Amino acid sequence: MEVRSIRLNNALAETISDHVPKKDKSTDFYSVLNEALNRVNQLQIESQQQNMLLSIGEVDNLHDVTIAAEKANIALQLTLSIRNKIVEAYQEIMRMQI
Image 1 (cartoon, rainbow, N blue to C red):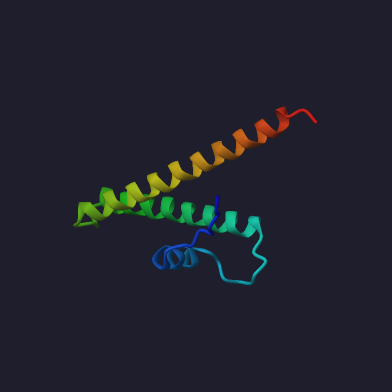
Image 2: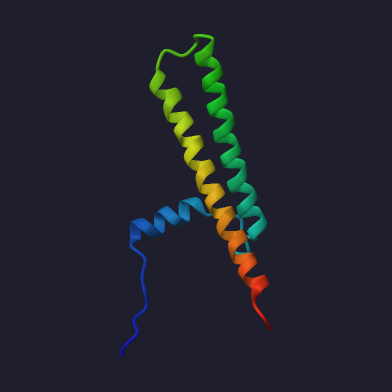
């Protein structure tokens, strides 16, 4: 059986490369995680600001407020899902007998 290498589609490769920090070749896990959490936090702050502006009557377009809230919600749900998977993987490793 012949095994062939898997190649990424150019559009997919460009999308992935746009989201990966380009400091140097040795980007560590901490910096990637820290950047992702900061982005989620920024989305939450933007959503809160939009809600505050809506409550005082500064926003004319309700769609912008709803979109900001949904972006923040989806980012938070993804973050929680990733955290849960990491915890499950850690617990599975701890259950392994060596």
